[in-house]
Structure formats: C-alpha cells, structure tokens
Length: 493
Image (cartoon, rainbow, N blue to C red; front, side, top):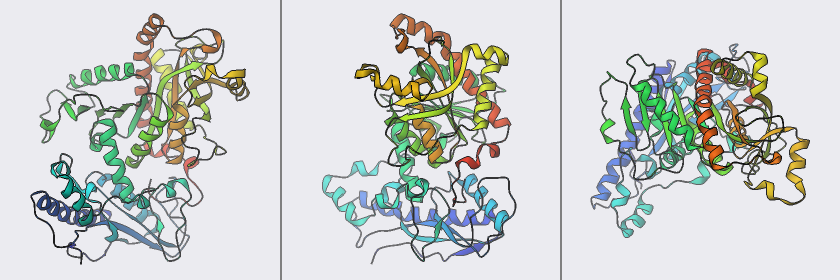
C-alpha cells in the first residue's frame, strides 16, 4: 500500500476565506508529506512502499440555470450540474482563488466543497523554490525514485479545456477552471527555466518584446523608479531573482538568495512590482512564433489581466516611414505554431479596451492630437510569418497574399501572442514600430538601425507603460471581455 497522508474529509463552506484556508491546509499537508519523504530518500533512506500525495479540489453543485445578474464575463457556471477543479500553490494564488470563490457564491449561492482529490502531486512539483535535491542523487537512486514517487503525467495536463475540445465523461464533474493543478505546476516550473525568475514576481500586466534594446530601457526605467521614495512600485526584479527594493524599503526574507546568472535564460523576464501585483512584467521573447507560443502557454496559468506586444515590424506600405507605429486590429496567421490548437478559421478580434488604451497612450506620450496621430500611426492588419526570409521566396507569393489581406505590417510574433491570448482568455494587444520596408528598398543597415533604435525605443516603451496605466485606472474587470468566452465557459477568470 502506498504511504499517503492522513485523509482529510471534504468540508463545505459559505465563506470564501474559510474555503481558501481549507485548501491551504490540505495542500500544505500533502506537500510536506512529499518533501519529508524526498529528503529522507536523498539522505539514503528507501521507503518501504511508494509515497503519494494529492492535490486539493474545490467543487460546487447547482440545480438551476438561475444565477445572480452580473456584468462580468466569468464567475458563474452555465447550468445545473457538478463542477470542480484541482488547485495548487494556494500561497501564490490566494487572492485569485478567494475572488473566484466569492464570485461563485455571489452568482449561485451554493456551498463550496473542498477536499482531497484523487490526482497525485508529481514529486518534481513538490520542490520548494530553491530545492535542487534530485541533482544530489546518483543514476541508480534517480531510477529508483521513479518507482517510489509519482512523476508528471502529460495526460493530466493537456489544454483540452482551454481549446474547447474537452469532453467530460458520464458521471464526471465539469471543469471550473481552464487549467488543472498539474498543468499549472508544469507551467510554473517552465517559467523559472525560461525566464530566470520565480512565478511569484510576475505582474498582472505583461509586455513582450523581440529586442534587447527594449529590455535595456526597461531596466534603466526600473532602477530609476527604485530611486524615487514616492514611486508606486516597491521592487524591481531581474533574472536570477535579483531584487532591488525601492529606496527606503527594507530587504525582505529571501532577497539575499537572488544572484545574477552566469548567462541569461532563453527568454529573460523583468518585473516592476506593485504591492497589489498590478505592476509590469517585461519579457524578451527573442525571435520567432515558437518562442511566443512557448512563453504565453506558461504565463497564461498566472491569469494576467492583459498582455501586449511591443516590437519591430516590416512596414508593407510605401506611405509608411521608419519609426511609424502600427496598431494591429487584425492578424494574418502564417506562424503555424497554433494551427492544431486554434484552427485558422477562428477569427482573432481586436479588443476595444486595449485598442483605445494603446491609441490614447500614443497620443499622451507623443503629445499629438488625433489628426496628427495619423501621420505616425496606422491601424491595420498585421501578418505574422514563421519564415524570417519570406522576401526570398519565389514568384512573390507572400507579397500577393499580404496585399490581398490588406496587411500594413509584418512580423514573426504578434499573431501568435494575440491568438494565444484569445485561446487562453487573456486580453491582448499589439503596437509595433516600423524598422524597415523591404518591399520598398529600405532594409536594415547597421548605422541606420542604431539611429532608429535610439530614437524610438524609449518612446515606444513609455507608450506601453502608459497604456498599462490607462488599463489599470479603468478597472481590470472591464478587460475580461465576453468576446473571449465560449458557449459553455468555465467559471474561473
């Protein structure tokens, strides 16, 4: 028989805070059981039987289609039935979980049932932030570990719920959340690997870029904010979890563990932190739609309020000038990385709240009136391709397609980021800057590029930061549009 913790029977709650406390109690009991067993295993002790622990769950039962009237696009189930989801890291998601519990109670008035699920916690997902215990084991002990502890099961962490392809079997509960606990844990571990920072530092507004110039400017801005005693931000985080606190604030436990990595991770992340996590995270995703899909697949489990792409593009119209902005209101998807998850016949709509905020931010930062903006910003279709050298293809077929689609700009990442935002119900937007015009003989040259970057990067970044300020002040509830919700949608935001 497996070694498992003492069973904690399901409990029912009418107070969201009580339900959250029970989730925390179960999770901590289960994780402690795994960590203690693993520590003994590393020290040389071999358990007499396999060691297992399980995720907590939350469940609701409804018997009617009636629900409280709400302007929100989430926070309710579609009709009578049993709905549940497994939960993980209630320390990280405490505010999020409590808010989802509150909305379920408000919408349906039903009790929240919390208990221990039958879904095992993989041993890799039990390690604390700075644990590296598996690296201390020899090859034989690592093989034995596979027999004694549960390993990640990819069948338990696919994206069928988010993709709209999940079919619950007769007698099985319907999902409450887009992501199961193992899927969330998988992404939390991937985020550490790809970005070099802990998931705890990620903020609810995310900017993506494909150029290091933007990151350099964001770092400069972050340190400048930390030098202001009255800044709205409390910390700036760099890869390696290097923490700079705002002047006048004392260091917190764990800050000393941060260390600059010997080399940057694949997609380094930087975080300008507000107390309520409504600050700004910026990630350099590098080049290509594969990176764009990878990082958004994982950041999505953190349920941010919005993500936006600030990058460079090829201008496709002769009337555009280098340095002009492009506000995407439609996307041509020739990136191919999401074709299996999100068919090409699915439209990716522009979200009015994001569009308005970006346009207003351009006006605010450039100090131009609406008529003047038309000289430096064009709203239109952005085409994204997975072929960086599309210009070299024979017979001008890409050019013909781009012309037929009315595209005004071309890049490699924006459509992927927007499409994954649509897929994962994360509000999205794109503001690009024209850095070359290959169809019109203006290709990037080193001297010209350096001048262009100096002239535009600072302004472009400040526009993105201003757009976040506008979205935050307008109320984040307005961001989560019904455009992003399907017929039978999960209740969790």
